[in-house]
Length: 99
Image (tube, rainbow, N blue to C red; front, top):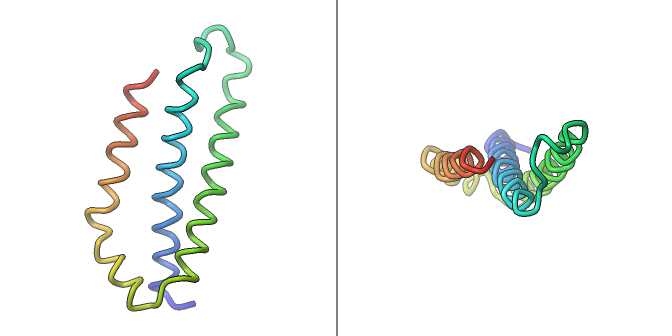
Protein backbone atom coordinates (compact mmCIF):
# COMPACT_ATOMS: atom_id res chain seq x y z
CA UNK A 1 0.00 0.00 0.00
CA UNK A 2 1.39 3.36 -0.97
CA UNK A 3 1.40 6.40 1.29
CA UNK A 4 -1.51 8.32 -0.32
CA UNK A 5 -3.80 5.34 0.18
CA UNK A 6 -2.66 4.97 3.77
CA UNK A 7 -3.24 8.67 4.39
CA UNK A 8 -6.70 8.44 2.83
CA UNK A 9 -7.49 5.47 5.06
CA UNK A 10 -6.43 7.47 8.12
CA UNK A 11 -8.52 10.44 7.00
CA UNK A 12 -11.56 8.25 6.39
CA UNK A 13 -11.09 6.58 9.78
CA UNK A 14 -10.87 9.90 11.61
CA UNK A 15 -13.84 11.52 9.89
CA UNK A 16 -16.10 8.51 10.23
CA UNK A 17 -15.20 8.08 13.92
CA UNK A 18 -16.09 11.72 14.61
CA UNK A 19 -19.34 11.57 12.66
CA UNK A 20 -20.34 8.19 14.09
CA UNK A 21 -19.67 9.16 17.69
CA UNK A 22 -21.52 12.46 17.32
CA UNK A 23 -24.48 10.75 15.71
CA UNK A 24 -24.64 8.09 18.40
CA UNK A 25 -24.30 10.70 21.14
CA UNK A 26 -27.12 12.78 19.71
CA UNK A 27 -29.30 9.71 19.26
CA UNK A 28 -28.64 8.55 22.84
CA UNK A 29 -29.44 11.98 24.25
CA UNK A 30 -33.08 11.56 23.24
CA UNK A 31 -33.92 9.03 25.95
CA UNK A 32 -30.89 9.22 28.23
CA UNK A 33 -31.74 9.71 31.92
CA UNK A 34 -30.37 12.76 33.75
CA UNK A 35 -26.66 12.57 34.55
CA UNK A 36 -27.10 12.77 38.33
CA UNK A 37 -29.36 9.70 38.49
CA UNK A 38 -26.90 7.27 36.90
CA UNK A 39 -23.58 8.47 38.23
CA UNK A 40 -22.00 5.02 38.38
CA UNK A 41 -23.11 3.89 34.93
CA UNK A 42 -22.27 7.08 33.06
CA UNK A 43 -19.16 5.61 31.38
CA UNK A 44 -20.76 2.43 30.04
CA UNK A 45 -22.68 4.08 27.15
CA UNK A 46 -19.59 6.17 26.42
CA UNK A 47 -17.41 3.06 25.92
CA UNK A 48 -20.03 1.46 23.68
CA UNK A 49 -20.24 4.60 21.55
CA UNK A 50 -16.45 4.83 21.28
CA UNK A 51 -16.13 1.15 20.38
CA UNK A 52 -18.87 1.30 17.77
CA UNK A 53 -17.46 4.50 16.29
CA UNK A 54 -13.99 2.90 16.09
CA UNK A 55 -15.49 -0.11 14.31
CA UNK A 56 -17.25 2.17 11.82
CA UNK A 57 -14.00 4.08 11.28
CA UNK A 58 -12.03 0.87 10.76
CA UNK A 59 -14.48 -0.35 8.15
CA UNK A 60 -14.38 3.01 6.36
CA UNK A 61 -10.58 3.16 6.49
CA UNK A 62 -10.16 -0.32 5.05
CA UNK A 63 -12.74 0.40 2.36
CA UNK A 64 -11.03 3.67 1.42
CA UNK A 65 -7.59 2.07 1.31
CA UNK A 66 -8.67 -0.84 -0.84
CA UNK A 67 -10.98 1.03 -3.21
CA UNK A 68 -8.88 4.09 -4.01
CA UNK A 69 -6.08 4.25 -6.50
CA UNK A 70 -3.07 6.39 -5.49
CA UNK A 71 -4.18 9.15 -7.88
CA UNK A 72 -7.74 9.12 -6.52
CA UNK A 73 -6.38 9.12 -2.95
CA UNK A 74 -4.26 12.18 -3.69
CA UNK A 75 -7.30 13.93 -5.15
CA UNK A 76 -9.31 13.25 -1.98
CA UNK A 77 -6.43 14.30 0.24
CA UNK A 78 -6.28 17.62 -1.64
CA UNK A 79 -9.85 18.23 -0.43
CA UNK A 80 -9.01 17.47 3.21
CA UNK A 81 -8.53 21.16 3.99
CA UNK A 82 -12.26 21.82 3.75
CA UNK A 83 -13.53 18.29 4.33
CA UNK A 84 -12.20 18.00 7.88
CA UNK A 85 -13.81 21.22 9.20
CA UNK A 86 -17.00 20.37 7.33
CA UNK A 87 -17.35 17.20 9.43
CA UNK A 88 -15.65 18.13 12.71
CA UNK A 89 -17.09 21.60 13.40
CA UNK A 90 -20.79 20.63 13.17
CA UNK A 91 -20.15 17.47 15.19
CA UNK A 92 -18.36 19.43 17.93
CA UNK A 93 -21.07 22.09 18.04
CA UNK A 94 -23.83 19.51 18.19
CA UNK A 95 -22.18 17.61 21.02
CA UNK A 96 -21.44 20.82 22.92
CA UNK A 97 -25.05 21.97 22.70
CA UNK A 98 -26.53 18.65 23.84
CA UNK A 99 -26.13 18.02 27.57
